[in-house]
Length: 161
Image (cartoon, rainbow, N blue to C red; front, side, top):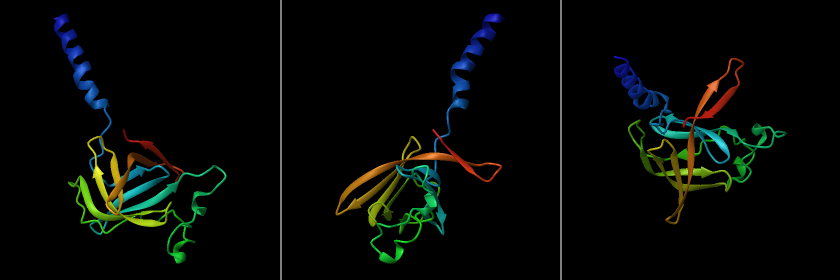
């Protein structure tokens, strides 16, 4: 009897427990994402995706809200804060079951330009964000984040995977 219990306990610890421990893989493009320079919230805006800059990584002595869209090709937009800017537009309608969206546009604040764009939700839960100009494409991988609103109203973010 002891051997039977020991074998079942070993099976449970090797195969069942790890499945509970593994992090949930992101199954939607919606959510918070860590980019190379910011945290972006992607959400459904009237059946289309929008991606709003929520936080910008800057030196400790600089207020992220003070960073302006100074590289924008449109002079009238150069004085607006980057936090709150929507990066995505003109993508086809989005539903939760889609793992790729093509033929949209993305705004790159660093260059102040809009590029043709494609989005791919990868099997590992990351989001491949592609920008294209004249048929030549480059991409960045965005990491999923879990954002928690703390009791004092501040937010904290941790990688999902």
